[in-house]
Length: 85
Image (cartoon, rainbow, N blue to C red; front, side):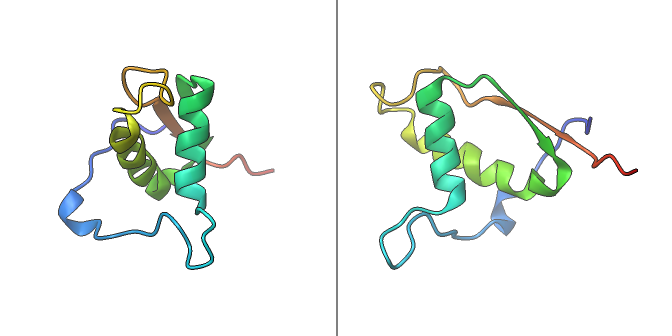
């Protein structure tokens, strides 16, 4: 499991939440889904590490919607290296 990870948010830039066709993108959907289901821990492959910051930011913005978000803070994330045969 990867240790603590930090980001320089100045390098993040803008990112898409809703496509031009009106459908939400993965990072928005998964953050809202985790919030509504009360997910406390997320364990996933390391290649999803870049998604984590975006999902945490979506979660933070949605926190004021108490009827939507059931946790006081975002889930705890853990990224693991892929297991190869």
